Length: 500
Image (cartoon, rainbow, N blue to C red; front, side, top):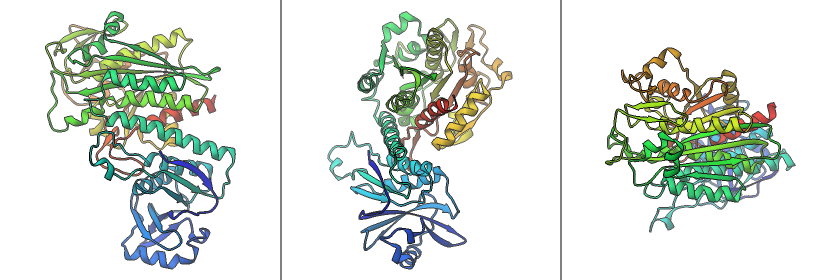
């Protein structure tokens, strides 16, 4: 992870500048007359960029060998504008950082006029300085290491608030990296047991309380969803629960994450094509745990209980069959018409447990569940925008405000009550899918989960199925696990504190 600092002048051999265009005219950002090491070569740089066919489009990176700084890297902003949003700066900084793998240090001289923009650039660098090489063998030595350190050039000085912004960026980058690492780890090495063991160590280092329920305890205590999904695997299920308890919390939230460490589909077996991506079906669990770690390290006065509902969905003589009926924690029965709609089953247990714990602890200000839940999410919103559903419009508005800060893309989706009858079962309290067809699959999943949340508790359901894993790097996002929702959950906690 790149270390970050702030300075007023560039002294590095590697300099990062912004590039945009409008009506075919290139513009360098900031105005390089303000960057002493290259201020005398404006025409020369623009000529080189033109000769190289640079366009300044988003995600474009152009490297120019130079005198003064040995390398000037231009990162695209898109269309020339008077000012740029924090997310534009975040993505541009991230794209540049990914392209600087193998470099020890770089100065980032981007158009920073506010602390929010400086923080965004720092986050982009922190998020872009990532690689996953744990399973490389003889080729590992040839891999370029991520950028080691960066200086953010600005005229804002080096106040306590600037230092805090840089520290926050480092913390976010580190815990997003934890999420990415978990997602990228193959299912041969990441199971419910190893997930719990790894995260227990991190929790201990942060002074966070840990509870782990094994398969025997889960059955004895009535966690029918997690038990049913995990019973077909030789890697038994777990509930991994952590509690962050600041001294005087201003708010109290519960986070619940889907943690299917591998999803074969069970007896609704998935097609072979693309099944390898099902190692990412635990992205929600990784995100809620990592976000809680970040909140704790930032020392936010927000109490968090986070629940990773962990299981491996496999086929065996013990696996759940279509038409089996299970009992979720709390007593509701579910007819499992589709064993590949398993994520909602483990989340149901987690949501009930979160509500029960919240009631014992004096109430919750909200529950958020995060899951790679439905292929229908990808059909509706694609691979870069996640869905958010709710039982409380005010809570959703607050969350969407938080995503405006984090830069992560979420879109509100409805939970139409008239669809609820599609989950009816003649043999149980409800079925886990709508048997009449695939239309509205994302909404039916949300409606199913809503059955396990008391109406009195504000609740958000985040379906991150598409954005959780990518096969195409962009901005500050590498190929593989993305860590989506971690930063938005942290921003939600920060916003809740600031709004009182």
